[in-house]
Image 1 (tube, helix red, strand yellow):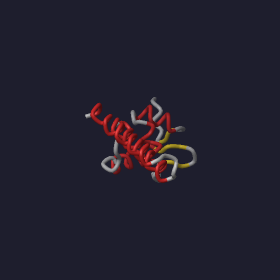
Image 2 (image 1 turned 60 degrees about the horizontal axis):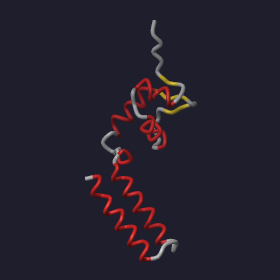
Image 3 (image 1 turned 60 degrees about the vertical axis):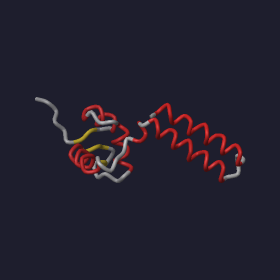
Image 4 (image 1 turned 30 degrees about the vertical axis):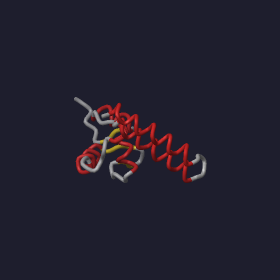
Length: 104
């Protein structure tokens, strides 16, 4: 008789069995999904949460353009913090924008 438990002992086990990216499971936990109790991951609440929030989630991290956006944000923070000059900031922004063509 198969073992049909309603929970998994780890996030990795839940991800593997449900064929869900573990990053999505971690995101669910971080966002307050009720599937996480006593170190276990409960299947039904997790699947309901993922279905309900699927449209809200983005796959930005899988998009190469996301990397360019993160680079621009990091660069702006360095400029605001006085770690790079205006010329350095402008030159680096130009290079990042030029890279955008590789991802179109």
